[in-house]
Image (cartoon, rainbow, N blue to C red; front, top):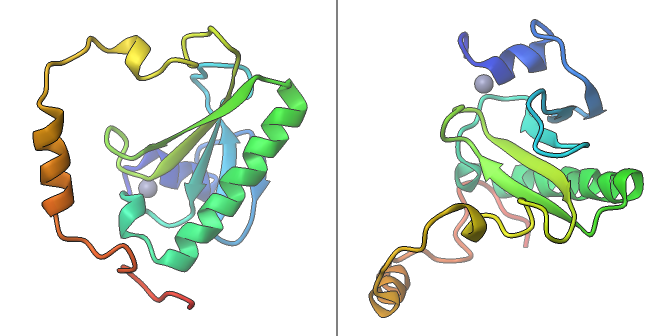
Length: 144
Ligand SMILES: [Zn+2]
């Protein structure tokens, strides 16, 4: 996509600090980090929603995310490595991977950053349960 900052990073038009790269995914340091070692894992293709990806590609993405989380654990020795899957504000799927220490602002996110809302949990559970999606359903081919 022509105006996508992440596509420009993938193509090399915008410089980045790469920490991992393969034929399908790239991991870079976020230029506006929440923590030292805050990385993004992005697909080389312009994809917006992880839940619309082919299952094999999604599995590959999570293998990369796992390896970046393990690198983060070794490099920064955090209490935990957090992951957020994004794609709303910037329409190119990006998985944020960053180290978090107990008590830091990331460790309680999102509950620590949002006011509690009053919702009917039973109604929410019923709506989700009734939404018909086969858990074995795939948007692409699946190995069985
Ligand atoms: Zn893009």
